[in-house]
Length: 273
Image (cartoon, rainbow, N blue to C red; front, side, top):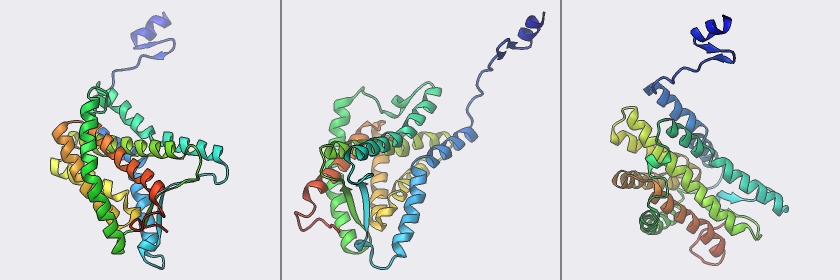
């Protein structure tokens, strides 16, 4: 009789029967966006701002200071260093898995953002063209910003000369591209649209966010990445896929990381400290 009464009340011996999830609301989406960004690139933006203020208030010019991107986590201990490098790369992708989980609850997943394997050659071709166009312009802008004192000297890598150096640099570049393009373009634009933001407001938010977490590089890093953000949002809206953007970003970062490792100290036009 007690068991029957429990079932009649909507429960079992193991506890209450789970009720259907409530429809997602704007408040839920807004909270979700804040939490995802607070765990990832939003926190990076705050960190970059603090770092930039520190650089501005430090004696000397910005170009006489370094912004280090890929450095040793355990100098003199290559295997421990490798473990830390791989851990850092893996941990940085957790927010992407979280976003994928949230999208799966809607019945879509990352394919809704165009991050899947359905158009590999198209994504590769478009991404390569975008990287070629942005890469040369971006390098010229960085050199000009650094020479004029608006930017720190960016040191893309300072890893030791070990066998895993270049594979780790490539993995780091891919991690950056997946994290940024999935979150800052695909996910953020989707959620802001669901929250009722206008296309222009969403474009500005995405682009300024991209620039803000690059502010540790200086004013040039901020402006250059805001412009890149605008271009990437427009391309995403045209193609409906972040796949080409991930490819483009990965190629840009691979070129920066590996190129610096090969050319630093060997050519006069590349700033070093």
